[in-house]
Image (cartoon, rainbow, N blue to C red):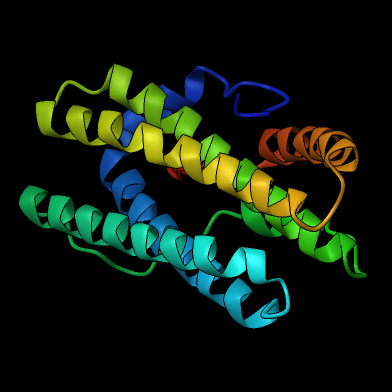
Amino acid sequence: MLNLAKPTDPAWVGRALVDLDEVLVDHAHCEKKAASTAVSLLFRYPEHGALLEPLSRLAREELQHFELMLSHLDRLGIRFYRQLPSPYAGELMKAIRPNEPGRAVDTLLCLSLIEARSCERMKLLAEALEEPTLKELYTSLLASEARHHQTYVDLARTIELREDIRGRLQELAEHEAAVLAASPEMPRMHA
């Protein structure tokens, strides 16, 4: 369902729980970046009408998740601040083909994989967390993260044939797994 080539190393959960404050701040940054990315695609691809409304909805939902994370940080007394980002997304995006329409398709598919990895890791957190409000938060986000993953895959299919998407998604998923394996151990959603 999530099209990931490899699951998260189970050790990630233990590391995340040890530095949970850092992971929560990073998660807020991830939601903010996801909203920004969706909006930037609206500007980059105005000629792809099928992308516009779904990306607009997605950006609004990501901003709502950002606000939700800010409220949880505030409730827990955790200050929101600038962090050194994980190199994960930048490394993942290096696989994007330079020319259109491949660039648009690959961008959407890479974003789908980021959402898929987020969904997988939120599920791991939901299962491991003891604090009931955070456990509920992560459980409640699973459906929307899975939907965001599928939305990006579906949007890529509006640009390129379904058969071509399947193979390319599999290639990018292998690349994503390699990027994740090479990522430094940081208290981040994607490291």
